[in-house]
Length: 482
Image: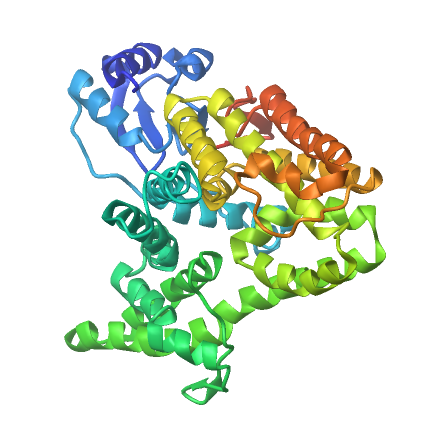
């Protein structure tokens, strides 16, 4: 656990002392100092403080990127410096005003997408951890493992209920945290989310019969465990709710805003946003299936690179379903299953490296937690959402290792002959049966590449960055937040 008193002392002494601080505030991730004399602040020494990820100069402030524990550091800084404690401020206030061309640039859109997903996922990470641990205990000590718990025992059932319920209701948790991220009504976002996974709605999807929302045809999609569609839907809600707040008379605001927002959001969610995510990922699934039939080694490399992203959307199930009949008929699969087997090792590798290499103690603890729950609980989503979607470098190292391992198992002609679970993720090489040696080489190579890249190049916020670059009379500031 971080010693926030010591961190606060180091920060104050490095920014020139409490007497040099005109004011200090904080947002979700940053301490923001307005200093009387900015030249007294030492950026290099600030970055050497363990709890500080990076230092940014923007808006006339010295901003220290701390991460999710910023409120604790802030409270201690105020206590030691005798500063007035204020509420957190909007983190987007000092964001650069971009032109439409800059906003639509692929790099900016990708960064915004990762920021949205990260902002929506980070607050609910404890749920991923709890669910992963409970499911791990069920597997380790239940009938599949040591056999200490029978399926009818109360302990087995309660652990299963908690683990399964957490994953089933991911859309609900994601709706709440996304609403906080996009500054829209959490209760309305929760209402839309529970409608999407309400038993009667799931029964409509299961029946497969045409259904419409206010006359608009609805795509029949099962949204249990869905996260990305909910994030997109809540983002859309933020604009729709804002519109109704703008046009509603004060006297009728309490009625018009919630009712109008939900009426519009039902078709937007069920007929547009949700199906849009499924459609895009369906195209990806079709592409992978097509690639598997024509491209050989390249297809396995693509699967190794993108499989975790596909798992995040839930499209891995239909892809498996499409591939399985041919695999059963042939008695083996040379493309999809080998690539997916490699990803188990790259996923373990990235979590292990994060536990060893992440800059602050809290992030390292998260890495170890997620590594253990995946290694013994067989649930990769916590790593996908808790690390890969929060850290662009982690995602890159994972994808590169997956591509290398996928390509290698294909070039070594390692086929998968076992299409059911073989135990824990690190046992996936058993699926290669008689090809276990080349399969093991490919899987370990993929994991080793991911681990080596992560250990050598680190994660977001760990590199030393030039804090300022001048262009004419203006300063361009680039910051990286982990």
